[in-house]
Amino acid sequence: MALDQVNVDDWEIDENGRPQPPEDKEMSFIDHLEELRWHVMRSLIAIALCGVVLFVFREWYFRHILFGTNYDDFPSYQFFCSLSNWLGVGDALCMSGPNVPIQATEFGEQFITAVKMSFVGGFVMAFPYVFHQIWSFVRPGLYKEEQSATRGMIFICSLLFFIGVSFGYFVIAPFGTNFLMGFEVGGAVNQPKMGSLISYMVMFTLPAALIFQLPVLIHFLAGFGLVTADSMRKYRKHSFIGILILASVLTPPDVVTQILIALPLYVLYEISVFVAKRAEKKYQASLE
Image 1: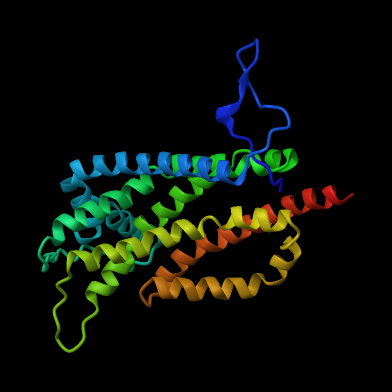
Image 2 (image 1 turned 45 degrees about the vertical axis):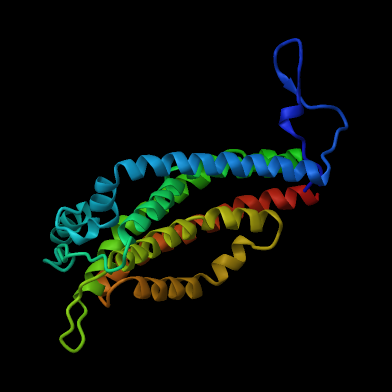
């Protein structure tokens, strides 16, 4: 990776109206910090704008998104019930929302939670732009070969991020909500506080978004020779056991449900093996 980065704001415009970088001009450490500050500021502004939109429509946002799994009209419930009948396993995957009252027991809790979760949702909405700002800061420090190898990184990472969020929200969250809300000990009644329910919704979704970045991580590791496709194939069985353990932690103790969760994660691992193979070839070619 090159140590110098070019400030695009200092580029000059040629006679054809195209920006050209200044020759032999390197940024100082202070210039790097200034450039980073502007990227961070732009990202925060985008998150804030999306957060304001969600705050304005907070009634819909909380009822249908954050509290969605609590109600029968959550789309995953009907889908999994239809899937269960299609697979011939009866009502094994059929679920319904707990439909319990959600409590706010602290002074100002609803307002504070509405503000906080509006900006969390704003980050999810603005993720492509935020990642674009991060990548715009990092990319000029790469060599031309590395820039070429990472072409389309913003689109790929954003796509995997939203697939992971969707997987966590529409698959993991309904199963997790039903299991936790249906589990009783000593005759206690489940009456969740809004902060507790929202915390679990975040736990069900955002980690899944990170897990789905696995192919990108493998691409970089294989590109530097730290991971090989052969090693991933060698430890495929170990990885499959790890995926089953992860699925059992994220879902209720139901074999059908665990397989339903583990299968996409295993497909993701196999995609990562393919990605590692391609990145490994480029790494070997660069050494020749």
